[in-house]
Amino acid sequence: MTSETPPPETTTSLETSTPSFVCPLSYSMAGGMCFRVHATDASWPDARGICILEGGDLIILDTQQKIDAIAPHISVGLYQIGIHHIYSNGDFEFVDERNQNDVTFNAWRPLEPNSNAGQDSCGRLRHFQWEDGDCNNARKFICEIK
Ligand SMILES: [Ca+2]
Image (cartoon, rainbow, N blue to C red; front, side, top):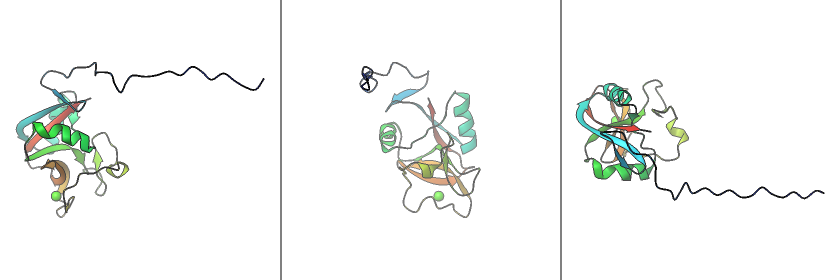
């Protein structure tokens, strides 16, 4: 007897099910993300600290779908987001420590990241695209809670 009966197929309905979670207070949902746009300016490290205190982190916008989902909720101005190269002077990484080069998608603006003679190590969104900027510059910022 060599034939085996395959185990019964299990089906999941994850893709079609409605998310069963709600976002924490002060957070809104878009594209499956719980996000909060802070309209008060803060440096990149301070902004990240605030997001962490709220139980999240700076938002990771690593797909065009996420950028498209957040775009209606922000302006074309500057927002601190969760990408940086504070700890390594070469590659950028997301705040979940994934190397940006390991992600096929990127949204760098033309001529970015330009490092600006080493001044630019912190990521931000400008006109719905990424750029690197001075970490000390205070900007609005977007937090995400997962
Ligand atoms: Ca730059």
